[in-house]
Length: 179
Image (cartoon, rainbow, N blue to C red; front, side):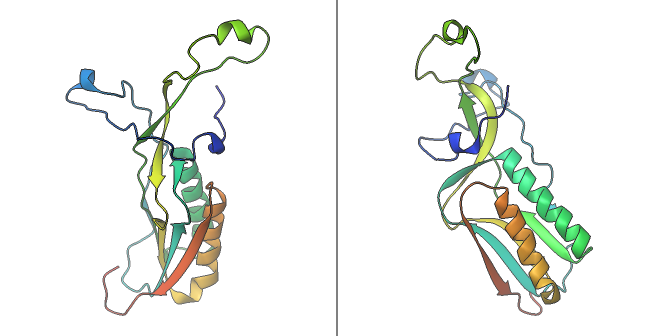
């Protein structure tokens, strides 16, 4: 089945469904946990000579699916690898815990007979998402100040893969502080 658009799941309307227990699987609210699309959370070498830090912050409360976070991570990392090789440290902060449920609906001829059922049914787990609050940091990018424009463009490209609005904050890292 096709993936539903982000507008179907981006708003936070109710409590989260994230309870999955490995020790007591019969006591779960979530019977089968969908896998997350995220593979890496930290990219680039962790050097001490970075003097510039950029953050991508959310401007609203929003729910981001794991595949959109992975797409944003990929586009930012590929751009940084191409432009400033091994001179950056990119970190993705939110982890997708929230289980998204959806009721599978049939489309096409004869779908009215197949899709009969409860109108507000609970649905089955389809994917996982991260709940992001307003002002919460999504990406942290540390680099040297000579690559300021490239770093800002990388975070702008990452924000274009996410639904919602975001701001990029830039700050200097003091000398001698651990990154």
